[in-house]
Each structure stands twice: as structure tokens, then as C-alpha cells.
Length: 137
Image (tube, rainbow, N blue to C red):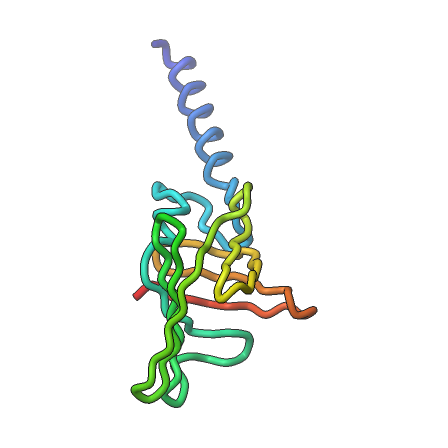
């Protein structure tokens, strides 16, 4: 290749890479991930905040476990007492929302951030916006 052709190839590669990286699906990122959304969400998560309330707090903790096959486990812990409930989860068609079904109740969340270690989402079902923040265990 001649020198001008090499420069053109490098320039096109940089422009393409920048365009690709800047096209993140979620408002708060990430802009790029090699893992699929399903692979990132699968696993055990601990809720660290719902709205203005931080967790764990005074012996309270809440955990969600997402299986790759769509099963969901919700666990609420308080001073040695534990309550668990099973349900299902699924992404919306565009994977920008997450639907959780527990005990017959369906809650839709808008995903703000989904990384290997963080899940931020908003619940608007009660007529107000409540942000949930979770961290991978």
C-alpha cells in the first residue's frame, strides 16, 4: 500500500471505531461490552439502593438472582430471617427494559446501566420514578 492509502485506511478505522463505541444502548453505559446482555445480567445481585434508601440497612438486605433461562429468585433478609420468592424475568424486544414477574405481579424497569458488576434501573409503575441500583455479588 502507498502511504496516502495507509493513512486513509487508518483514518477510516478510527472513525468506524469511534462511531461503534459511542453507540451505547443504555443511558449510563456501558458504551461497549464483549459480553451479551443476558450474560451480564445472569448471576446474584445485591440491592444497594432503592430511591433514597441504601442497603444493607439496619440488618435489612435484598438480593435478586437472575438465571440465564429466565428464572428469578428474590430474597429479603432481616436479622437472620429470610424470605424468598421465585419468578421470571425477561428483556423487552429492544433489551432496553427488564420485566420482572414475582408472585403474579409484573414490574417493568427501564435499564439505565448494565455492566458485569452494576445494574441501574428505573421503576415508573407507581406514578413516580424510583431508581434501583444493584451490585453483583
